[in-house]
Image 1 (cartoon, rainbow, N blue to C red):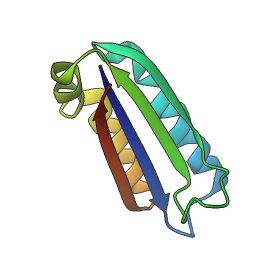
Image 2 (spheres, rainbow, N blue to C red):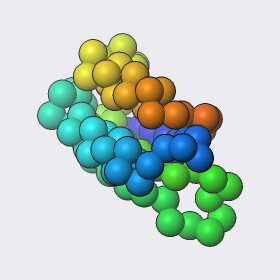
Image 3 (tube, rainbow, N blue to C red):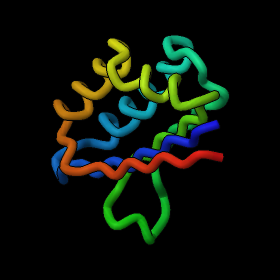
Image 4 (cartoon, rainbow, N blue to C red):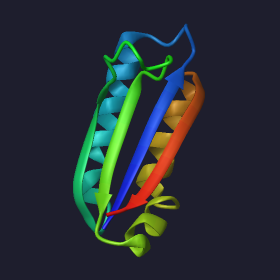
Length: 97
């Protein structure tokens, strides 16, 4: 299995409503992705967040499922929305478990 973690930092102009919409769109991805064991998304409340406000965690069955995730049209639509509302930076980590 593969754990895929994404942390996203947004511009100061990005509203709380827009952050909540990002989380909603992340969560809505699950039925559109093959090989997903678990998907979690939420607003990061840690004081050690270094400004990264939204977290996505997806557990995939295998690397093939992770590789299919990137070009998935639904995922691409969420990525476009994230850029639109002011994405500044993101950190992505993948580990095999």
